[in-house]
Image (cartoon, rainbow, N blue to C red; front, side, top):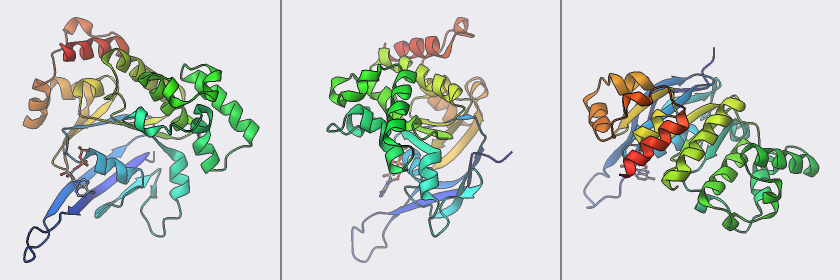
Length: 283
Ligand code: ADP
């Protein structure tokens, strides 16, 4: 089976400005030699502290930035091959759910136009078909159809994240890429949005790439987790194995900072667990 996403020795260097003319510009290895295959339908988590290279890696997976070394394949197609003729296709197959729904939704656009934006951009459907699709998507994410006529500021943070999810689903993608999708939300709303992601990933048969600095959130969303430090994957393991039997000292260090889960919670739904874990984090 062709992996949905293949990273092969992917690296990305940045050059910092020279402090002295005689100096060579210092190089930052933001991502180094990352290799992994993400299978269709997998929920793959990437955790790491701020500055570990998560955003740089995501930008490359989404085709927004080029690797310095290595290659990235989406459904078997190298996405950075030149000329970049397949970017339109990539835009449809892979959709982003943003970190901060406040800043990522254009305040001047009606919600219906925001959700339809990827369809208009890809010239998918007639205006009537797009309106029908928008209504259907708003319902799927738990918003009423009349939300289409309103503006983002008329919605709460959690509702805006629902709008962002509806927009991501519009062009019928194969992959959702979620970058810290709940970090800007209140604890009480986080579990709802995580539950929604859970639901749409199942319901729409998606592959999920979920990035967060928060191990407790990733635990309840992902099947497999990569721990990133200083641009490298130091450990990649099935979620439960990682939490029970972490191999890398850095993973154990990160885990030590996460509140322990009561063993009695085993078997509860993801939402209940996430709500409890997050409540524990807040205490
Ligand atoms: P994270 O998303 O995990 O917080 P980033 O991918 O944003 O990490 O950053 C990884 C490293 O790369 C950091 O040291 C950061 O300063 C550096 N970096 C990221 N983007 C740039 C850029 N455009 N120019 C220079 N350095 C960058």
